[in-house]
Image (cartoon, rainbow, N blue to C red; front, side, top):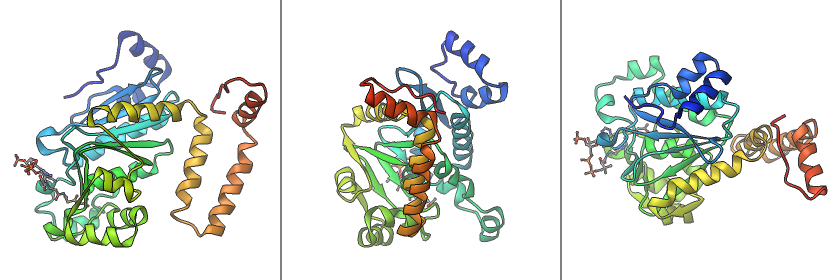
Length: 288
Ligand code: CAA
């Protein structure tokens, strides 16, 4: 069992005062397959590390259920302004757990809507950064693509090798990869099971930045801190607007963006941001 390792006594007291008991148990409680912490100078970046090293962080059902709980807790935690998901230096995640899937039937999958709960990662309103070292294969690549930003370590490898197992991606791989890198490369990866490295992933638009492996997580936390220093309310609106680009026509997307832009003028944070600019000082956002 892994415990919330950054929980100092003072931190524990503050958190217990400010959260309900249920929330406290979820964000700081015991997890078997992941490590959950709050990181950054102001402890405002939620940090989730996949922790099944022997199985290269294969995404078993228990792991993804815990991931959902940790994300729920960070979503409800007013201090957290961004979330980082990472794995180990060898593997972000080597995909869905093949041993767990091996004997599943169509009937079970269909009636239980197998893997539906993975979608929680893509519905989080707070910005989520994937910090990918090592293998991000199959469901691992799909998990990274459910996040908002992907940072990669130099030795990261991305791929959708499901075809080699006689199946196809089942957690958004054919859709998100195609939108990220275009049809030709997506088809090649999905149809051959080949992998691409970090630099090719960056060139193709899958990844926004590449770092030496040992700097990856701290750079992702820095990015999370930068995001968390802005208004959480406005960040959620910005994220909603960008995500709409994947769902709507250009006209519909522009209309939604305009409405959200107008809506920012109903917030204290928009007033504070512009006033601070005019007064030549740093804005102090209250997430209102
Ligand atoms: N599920 C379960 N166990 C896995 C796993 C997975 N996806 N990937 C690796 N493991 C396990 C291996 O079985 C092995 O365990 P044992 O020692 O108990 O046998 C351990 O992790 C280490 O793996 P390897 O010995 O294979 O390590 P390697 O360095 O030789 O190879 C690898 C690494 C290339 C990632 C290789 O493990 C591999 O090809 N893994 C499978 C990748 C894959 O096909 N992913 C897609 C899964 S299907 C999917 O994700 C569906 C979806 O869309 C949601």
